[in-house]
Length: 146
Ligand SMILES: CC(C)(COP(=O)(O)OP(=O)(O)OC[C@H]1O[C@@H](n2cnc3c(N)ncnc32)[C@H](O)[C@@H]1OP(=O)(O)O)[C@@H](O)C(=O)NCCC(=O)NCCS
Image 1 (cartoon, protein in one colour):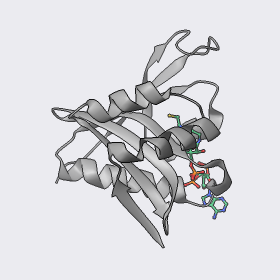
Image 2 (image 1 turned 30 degrees about the vertical axis):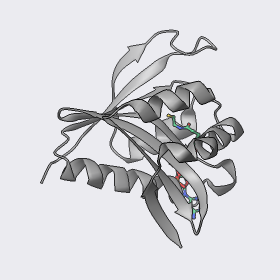
Image 3 (image 1 turned 180 degrees about the vertical axis):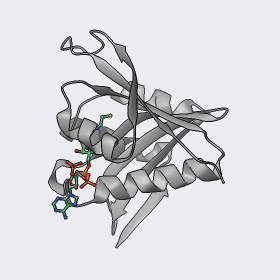
Image 4 (image 1 turned 90 degrees about the horizontal axis):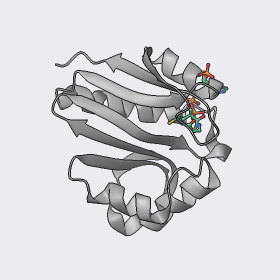
């Protein structure tokens, strides 16, 4: 059974573990910082009790920024990322968010294709943004609020 639930700080180990096994973006300290921001929402995609995906997003007035979006390697290409993204978009609609933003490496072809399917368009480029020297593409999706 698939479900989505908000993740609290007590599950920080779980977030860190999934991150370490996938894109290794943040240290445990950085994860702890994410949980401290009041405007940040962290939720997980679960299959029964197993967390297979995590999304971290932050709302500032009428804009939302996706700071983290990952599906466990073993569960990719089965529609779970799309499930989580559809949920996030619905949530933004309800919260009257007009713009959803994220950064993705120019080298991350899979993720870019994924976001393009959700009508994200490139609105900026941050040169040499990542540790490996690759550029970040700044992507935006306009949200129609209800
Ligand atoms: C990007 C990411 C979140 C996508 O997650 P996912 O669960 O694989 O996403 P989906 O399964 O919904 O869609 C991925 C592809 O699988 C295809 N797919 C979906 N269900 C499928 C199925 N049952 N059988 C075969 N293919 C399927 C989709 O059509 C999609 O095709 P695309 O490559 O043209 O977009 C995942 O690859 C990931 O975690 N990447 C690493 C982290 C990352 O790069 N994050 C983004 C930067 S912040």
